[in-house]
Structure formats: C-alpha cells, structure tokens
Image (cartoon, rainbow, N blue to C red; front, side, top):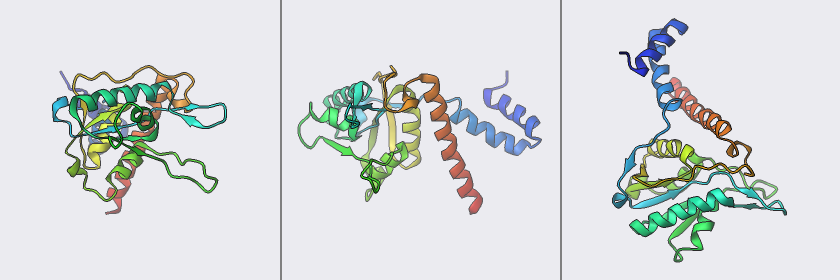
Length: 216
C-alpha cells in the first residue's frame, strides 16, 4: 500500500508533468497541509515556557483585552510553571492574565510595536519568537514548552524549531480548543476559518523559504 506522500507525489507528478517538483511539493503539503500535531516532551524537561495568544476581545471603549481563550491559555501556562518552575515568556494577552496569579518576574510579556497613530501593529507568531530571540541564542533557552490554542500549536512549535528553539508541546497537557465566537479577530471565531488562515500562513512562510533558496 502506498504511503500518503507517495500518493501525493505520484498525483502531483502527473498533474504538473514534473516528478521532481511533484516530490518537493508533496513533502511540503504533507508537512503543512496534512500535519496538525506537534512533537511532545515530558513536562519535567521543560526549562522555558512560551505562551502564544489566540484572538482577543474588544472592550466597549475599543481597547483590546485578553478574553476567555487567552485567560484559559494563561491558566495552562501557570499550571505548567507550577510543575516546572520554568519562567514564562508570553504575548501580552496571555502574560497579563497569567501575571495576576504568579510572583513578580516569572512572566515576561511580549508586546507589539505601535504605528504612527499609536495603534498596535499585528504581532505574528514568528514575530513573537523573533522578539524573544532578540540578542540571545535560541539554543540557550533549553527545552521550550509551548502553550498555544490546540489548532495553533503545530505551527507555533514548527516555527519555533525553524528559528532554532528546541520547542515542543508539553506531553499530556490539554490545550484550550473552544473557539470564541466574539473574538476580536474574525479568523479566531470559527474552526474552518482558522484552519484556512493557518494554512495560508504556513504556505506564506514556505513561499518565503523557496524565494530565498531561489536567490542563492
């Protein structure tokens, strides 16, 4: 019986008339379009915790507040800290919710930049990781346990590993998986909408890698 990759490779070779490109594209599709689980690590090996937000809520005065999903992510980060004593570096929505339950200095918030009007600039998953790594070797963080919304986890871990972090999903830890229909980010309100958004980001990052390789 043919493997999924072999079937994709054969199909794309026929469709594109190019077996070599068919094989490369099949490998990318298997990883990015069909892979939704992340490698895991025993909780006891974790030395740092990275927390990623998932949407937010818009307050009546138009300010952004963490919202229920990020509060749930903060609860997971706090529980993971209690089990490991590992420091937490998290996007501000998760960090703000977690800091209220932890001693000062345990949580380092990652804030977005501001535009000329003082509005926050969207901070991507890769952007969070680049900010964490600023001025520091990613390998120096040791084993990183990622806290992220369930459908976001695979991309968070993959992106972190691509940037040099030894990142994993914490073994045996359930992540929040219920979508917030009132999220301030429309793509975070519905599962199909989010999965398509995630695929778009994954393919955009792969496109950037392909362009960089073509320029060498």
